[in-house]
Image (cartoon, rainbow, N blue to C red):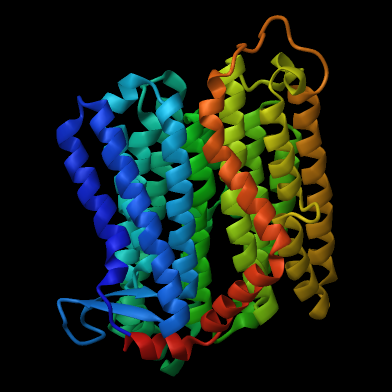
Length: 493
């Protein structure tokens, strides 16, 4: 079904970002406009999910040119879920920013580039054109460079330079892969590419191109062995930005991987998806080992981004309806819980001035609200029942057992226990014990104004766990669309 509605989650933050550039000295006006925009995008995203469930895949051919020549925006159930999560997390992190981002950053276009970042993320989820996927990646990356470097501290400048250089190399390979794919198929429309690839007599060069895409999206999604850039980059960012990045940026790479390896490169899954499966195992294991070696709240969470990404691509590597549904469910769970945990780290830093575990302690007595929020989110990340992390991991492990992939299931279980260990390590050092006299927490209730966005995410994680059957039903419907490329192709072409 054709509709203009699906372009609005891209257009609204773009226009808002441009308008905010003219109010850079008026912080209160920026906050109000940014909040209105975030709420509007949230409502639009939820309506798009509802419309897809009721009417099927939605498409928009920009300029009314015929497919595949028109620039196409496409909203299937997976894309709708992703833009809904994007709008939810961006809204929570935005309200957290109001109480944690300093005035200097706010006056230097923080909210404007925050909106541009949302535009790039939503555009990447909704585009049906592989070149425009590259364009939206560049938009969100440019915005992320600026958000990461705001403040101009030495550590920020150092890590943002590394982040920028690595992503520039990734973008070059992305563009080269798009160019080679265009030379083979003569089109940039992803649905049309899927048709041409399925009809291509020789698949050798296409397989090589698929591996380049895997490297590109693996670098952006922080898969093994391409995750080395992430922990330090996210550590130096303000907590609101770290939560925004940790929840969403790597998931854009994972989304792109799932999209092209269920739509385009599906002719030799015994080769391509086996590689993905091995990468997922190493990503899970090495990520959690990196987390166990750290002694800083935010550094531990940064390494866990890597580890948990492995579960998402595990579903893609197994490549069955249950596995893809489990991956979708896990993405929903992880975006919410990981953003929540970074915001909890921000609350901890707000009241103590540090995230170093050895300088913390006793917050359970002085700030029990923060402690309980962390415990719920941390247990969900580790996969404790009846929280959302348990049911999403259970679906993935069940899919692995059905295929006799006992090795990857063992790794997934082991990583869950190690994740639980690292969450308990944080709880022990930060919230248990006695207060560190050198870094006493700020007394009073001022921090409570920052609790609502964190609490909403925790409540959602609990809700998704208690209503896992419903969420799994939505994830299964999304998986069915992903594994039936003909439905997507017909809707677009």
